[in-house]
Length: 231
Image (cartoon, rainbow, N blue to C red):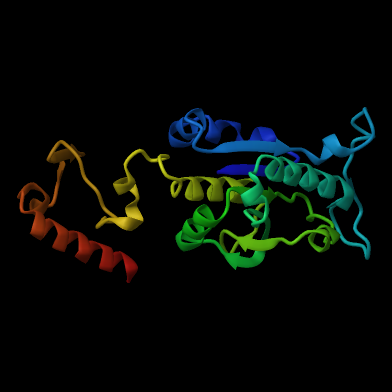
């Protein structure tokens, strides 16, 4: 699985991708993450010449990211994705372009599973400021996705959310497939040693059933807890 990220701020991803499971997945070559900065697709050399935003037509506050630098960045990502495929895969569409917007289709685990199974390359288009010129969506077939009913400063956080969730579905990333919480009898509440934790004179104990060794009763308890959480 290769994630191609169109963003003005690639360094925003550094800390998260360089820690824990995702870092190991990258090192083990289970996933790859590539960045394409629209500024790199402008003709200028100075910062002023490399500006990629301008005032919106029709008025209004803020700035809008210009279409052409983003189009060129997506073109580059597509060429990287298509160039590495075998002749057999070239005949199939195994690349998806995702455009982040609060009004898009709601992202969830089922979507992550489907995408991980169907696609080898995912291109995330991360907007900023007042957004990206809508003509980019007309130049390419994109799917509009939302990670929740709220507005963020840019698409970088949604991209990280999706990379994390989708990567978990890639074989070998978690090491043990049973680590997928959504595929096992998991409880929203978990406990570990010691059996009793004391804080400010009060004792907090692990539920007795978890110490019983009775796996049937433990599974029943987990189901009850999960059902409570759903309510």
